[in-house]
Length: 461
Image (cartoon, rainbow, N blue to C red; front, side, top):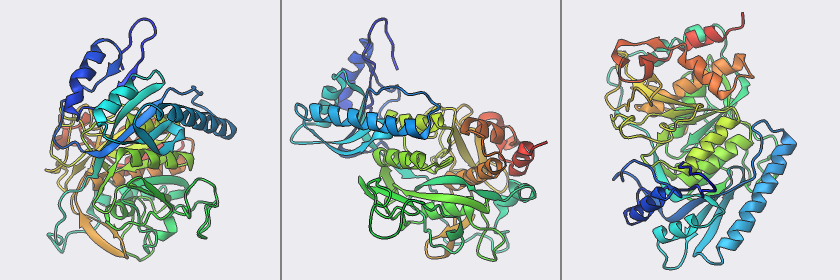
């Protein structure tokens, strides 16, 4: 953000995809009033038509806050959202479609014949607005699926052996005290290898009512935020999220299917990627907020896009302030994220751990993104067998498949150290990786995760 002497307005405007708006935004940047990302417009950037995200200037609170302070913070921020929205809608052609009080944001729809760039300019000129941007779309990072495994004799869970989970399991197989939010296409919470490890909302019953008063009915195992709608059933109809969840948390040693890295954990299912595998930053933010409010310790984000959403970045920063580890997939375009960033993986936030994919030869997978500054660790992501909806299994490729290996290992470390915060958990995982020749000069420090070493390093003396 650009700062100048005196009272500068510091309005954040992210509209890189809106070519007609860039020239005006650039002149504002030179005047010290606005921020515009340096990345040139990218053809892969998509937005939800006619939708914006806005964040207002909010009263500050200390990072360490108790339950009562959190309630007061939410009340304060709800009042700010209500007041400012009521004022702005009188003069600007917008309507509020959703509010996210914890991160101080609202989802807006442009009404009438007004254009998105015009409305962005109007909102950016208001002193109460800190940030305004389009509602960007993001997509699940999944490489093409093979029709069947390429070798029937191939050890099914080869990746678990490569990252030394058997050595880790000698110390711990996880803990139901650790909560992982799988923010994805949802999770089949009835799968026989996942059901025992699903998170349960203690304040909600499956009775058609909103028992906990959070505005979502029957959010027993998580919630669904798809296309701007909120609901209590995060069931996966696409498969990607269930596959991710299985690598993290399929129950081990139960004679069923596969074993996750963590045999004991609680998976909070948060569906924001719809059946076509895509979703919006607004829905991603709502899912992150739900995870934070409900006590998640780790967030798995096997998805992303090329647009740098400052709104989404603020939500990830809120996770950092609350000590939550954010494990993100690097992406599957085979590109250098140092040159063309991918988000949320490329956000420079201390709790973000970005994961590349390797194959069974400990080489970078041909589809995996990389970057010696922005990609932190590698894990297996080729021909990974895991759970799928309706008690099925499937092989899948992608950095989406590498990321949950790291998330699962984070669970094992966290289970032995409940007080370990996101930043420190990240350091523990990075400090115990194996140096791999094929990753040198490709990702930061050239490390592939070694879960056995991470758990051993974290073991109390």
